[in-house]
Length: 240
Ligand code: SF4
Image (cartoon, rainbow, N blue to C red; front, side, top):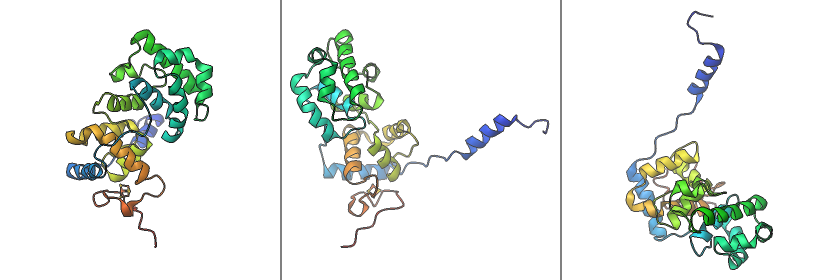
């Protein structure tokens, strides 16, 4: 081994760093603004598709929506919220009953446990009210950064963007916010989203990913932002 050569493990690490694919730069701010402007034109006041009646039921609905569809969650919460739409009633309902009411959605056992846990913590430490900061929200069982961002945005009108699978895909495909992780995509979106679009950015991007820029075969031929989107393999119009 030459006198100054790094030990084998360091060489391997160096090779790994060199091999890492660099994250491309986002598209220009003018193009990002054009995409938001198109999405706003299509739906000026976008709303969450989850059903809720207050900030507490929103927290529960969003926590239940992990790895489940909004339609599936709405079906389950219809009966659940009819019996308990506040932390005290939920705790009184009990974990077994909650589990039974949400058993149609994925991970229901763990989610039932979290619903009771978060309700109890709200009673014990927040006077039964939903807190309005991310640091406090993520202390609740079953509430991570994504859920907290949705609650802050939808319930309290704060300019947050919760990166789910749809936003992650749209951010990367369009080139608005390239990133290898949801946190990276969130950081870029927070940087490049013009203030005038901040409040609804979250819903515009989710709905675009859910209905147009879908995972398997994006509907590029009818997409209103295809002229500024950077995605290379755009789907052509189907033969009529
Ligand atoms: S052009 Fe295609 S890839 Fe680009 S945003 Fe529209 S649907 Fe998605």
